[in-house]
Length: 204
Ligand SMILES: [Zn+2]
Image 1 (cartoon, protein in one colour):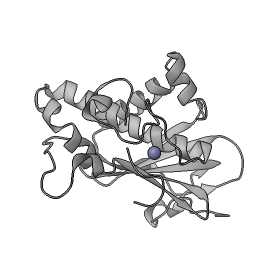
Image 2 (image 1 turned 120 degrees about the horizontal axis):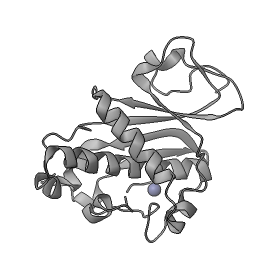
Image 3 (image 1 turned 90 degrees about the vertical axis):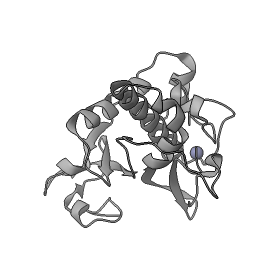
Image 4 (image 1 turned 45 degrees about the vertical axis):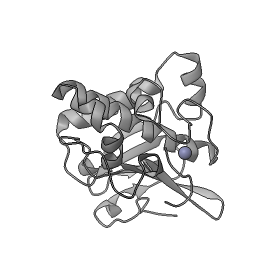
């Protein structure tokens, strides 16, 4: 990786230069443009979950770098350098304006909400989140909420999935817990609460 392009899929991201050691940057790219308030809401939700003083949550997020800098991918400028980076890709409808339950062939509990890839035993620092899948799991409860609360719930759920995958990367472990953030499969209740989430650790 010696270099420059920490961000899979580049090329717009290729300008981000990497220098070894130093603090961690978590760079978030979204498939679809997000409004400034959604960026700030998402980052606040991630930080709130990392700053929790709940003993159990604190234990779960202990492996994460509390001083990590959260960066918007759409604000990465040419020549910008980061020391170490984890790249987050948000796919689908993260604004969850019209959440639809997923019907048909796929059962909801089989949809990965997020994933990382493990190659040659190493979990790569690239993390994917499927916002549409999260919206599908939350479709029914979201419909009962007002717009502001809906956004808050969606940001909280996205933050939870990001932390789940980030823990896999930080610990280099594909393992899961019976409950809490490292639970293998998240239900709607998990995503609605303060504790939650789902996915396979290797591949998709
Ligand atoms: Zn997992």
